[in-house]
Length: 330
Image (cartoon, rainbow, N blue to C red):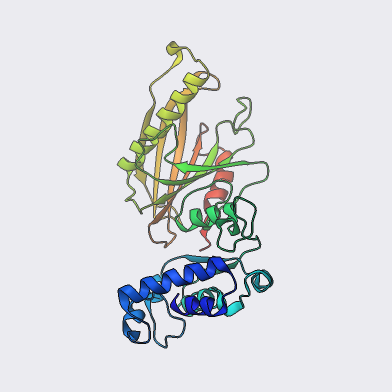
């Protein structure tokens, strides 16, 4: 900033830049002396120095996703401010990102904006926030903070979708079961006849709970969270469809650990007795639950197969295909 200020004063072209530069020089000199008499002090005060031959403060960003946005329209700078590339912060910013990349920070990005900086009054200014692509930036923030967005989320695993099966993704805990202790993402595969009571695969589905925080998975925890999940799901549909109270039955879930299946860390089986809110009759769902090994820090994969059909019915074969297709891609 000191060097830039001296350059702008000497150039004496753009009144706004000259005025700022004089203020900066006056303030810095008053508080810290000149850069020529106090080089080490200015080095200490500088967040990043592109001319330094040893790592500086950028080393503290080695593990942090970083983006630097710049209006890189040098033609405009030359024509309107008489600024060359070296009168801007572009060389410093690009050097900082380069050092982070060399240090192994694959989340460091230099963004040469495709948008021009435009102030609210319509005038050009390279420092205005309009150079940021807002949608892209928000999606980048969500990805790096692991905030789920069904429209942009890229799963770090593979899970097949058989022909004719439907899909849906949403965040856990869902709005109808906020008390669930499991948090993360639910990724569902609906059988073609899931909502048609005349079909053999009615109410049959397989869904993945991609859980954050690496919770310990056991029968008690699964039973508690499934109880909250299906009690909330039924209640929401009872209210939404104005189902008479005399048709409502208690939701009861039972889960037990069974012999571990091939490619599972743990395997559980259970049942869910609940109201089928589509036919408004009691229903018993059978379930098999697979805990998968993804070798991923702070994540656990729990794949749940669900159907009112007995376990030997052929609808389970397709659900087993889905369960066995699971693999980690990152």
